[in-house]
Image (tube, rainbow, N blue to C red; front, side):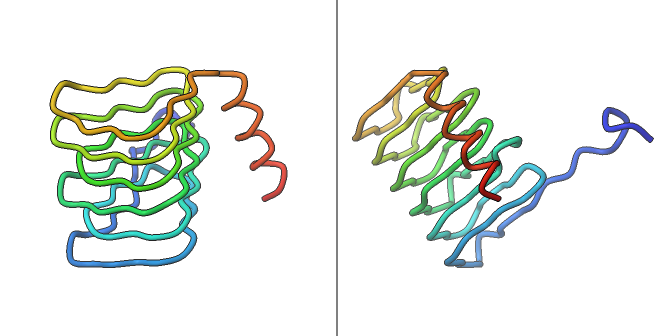
Amino acid sequence: MDAQSQPHTSTHLPANLAVSGDLAAAQDIIIDGRFEGRIAVPDHHLSISRSASVRARIIARSVTILGSLDGNILASEAVEVLAGASVRGHVTSPSITLVDGALFTGTIDPQRSQAAVQIDRYRRTR
């Protein structure tokens, strides 16, 4: 079975769970609960749901935020901050979407090359 025919899988942190530490996965991550620490999914997508509260340094291919995030994001493809979301921190990504109704306090660096270099550096140190 090749990679395209395999079912899509994701790691899920449920709403009633609080976790501190480093989280790394070789698949997409969905956070519904509370997380504090570092999240590393450089080749995958991270979703922070409406019920989630996250304080983290994030390295991902792409990130979608509906809940609360306090931290820095390094995304090689895209970051979406949707209506009702609250984000405080620094975002480095070539594509950033802030939807009407989202709260954002921080800085944005839209440089694709900067994101790619930092993610490549992370991969080499793993």
